[in-house]
Length: 546
Image 1 (cartoon, rainbow, N blue to C red):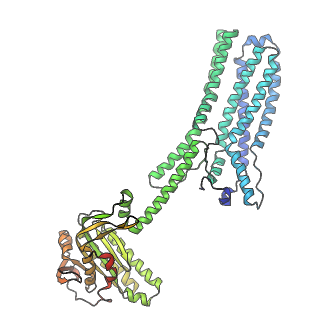
Image 2 (cartoon, rainbow, N blue to C red; image 1 turned 90 degrees about the vertical axis):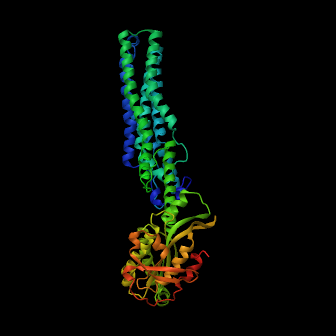
Image 3 (cartoon, one colour; image 1 turned 180 degrees about the vertical axis):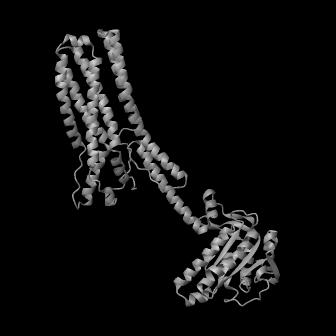
């Protein structure tokens, strides 16, 4: 959908090639002009037969024939003239082949005016024709009897009110598809037709007040001039009441449909948005405040789509839990002490691989490697804090709390080692493998940096220890090494799957660390790593807290 103030020349041509209303629409418009005239003529005949006082007609014996002789021909002429005039009022010039943008814009502006003002244009045609009819029949009768001229004129006016009101509402319905097309190119920026208030009040005036005014006029004439028997007055009230009920009800129903249709369209689209479907647009087919509501809804959904896209990209960058926490809460730099478990995995052999293989092959291997890492970590409730070249840092227990973060990290380490071997290393046929280090303990988790640029991360001894244990894991047959701290914090079921192989002083640490490995690899002999044991040093500045 284009912006509210966007020129039609900026809209794709396939969306602007609307050079006319179409044959079907024009045919319906002709019927809309003809049919209400026939209905209005019928109303006049009924009122003339049952409402006009018989004493007035008896006073001028030729009045009935005189009026009928004029009524029939004028009705035929009015229908033909109305159809022709209405067609001219709704005509749009044809779009020349190969027209430039200026011509297209001119044709589009003409079509927009015709479509949006169509109900008023055709209602005005009917109003003029019926006003001429009222004046003609008043002049035809007023010189013979002033009372008869007034009553016949009032009868014709009432028929005209019925005709005009029905025409206006039917034209709105017929032109709705065309309105949808032009407003899809350029949404409404203000009221082109009467607003909702005037539409409702107008429906009441034309559909209810006008017929009731006929009842009041009949009652006033009976009081002022007499000429009505009780039975005749009852017939008059019944006829005018029936007109008010039937045609007033039709006008009010059409008015209610015109008001309800845009609201229902927005409500249906709102249900889809509530269910999480943002790929929805409401067709804008109303030019009142309801059309602005439809266009505003589309603008809102467009903003929601953009927000969801940003949220999705944000979640891919920092993780869904971190993204959700950032969107739902205010930014606060700093952190809090949390019980966490940390898993550090580093690819061994990637330096040699990068020197001997094409970059695309290296990137493909890294993507496969990280895909397995992400899948395993997320399946065990963890969160990928960051990628560091060919290494990844995963955290369990923040930002989403876990009942057993250490057990989850240990289980993830065991599963990850097996899946990487089976799904990445054995398949690639390359001389690469991975080291996985796991630790647990208290760490500070929070937003680190500045209000202009920050990240949610974890800092503390478990992070450093996991990175150092990753070096140890590279010398272990199974490629996985965990700290005694992680083992002591894990659930008994998970701890039983591990065994301690001894203690050693890790680089950069003063105290010795108990090292544990999965039981299925505890008896395997150490092996040489494909890279120096300090391969994680490149990430040390980002991972260490001291």
